[in-house]
Image (cartoon, rainbow, N blue to C red; front, side, top):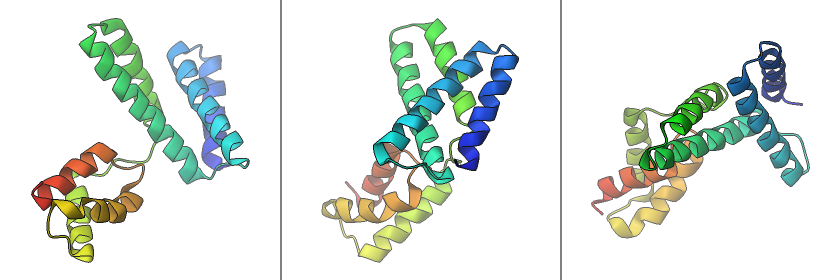
Length: 149
């Protein structure tokens, strides 16, 4: 069992003892997502893979928050925001704008991209470097801006 997965399990136990319902709910969902991913792969996850699962859960919460804001559901926005804050502790640190711009510029130079037609080549170079640390839509927007598309 990975160290991070064990940490999630310990944190869940502590939250249960403290009767912190929001934290218990968020950590149970994270642990369930981890177990489901382990069943898919038929092996235990590494710490990096656990972080990827946590990042996916954070992204789901962010999408839910946006949907609830459009639906004017302040109660659910607050709940999802609290859960997202808890889950972010287990997700990899997100890249800053400057670092992402640098990685995109390097990838464009590596593939010799000349215009919007090279978007796929550049994305193919960038995504493995930023996986889990930057949203794919944001990366795509940055690449399009640089390629003039």
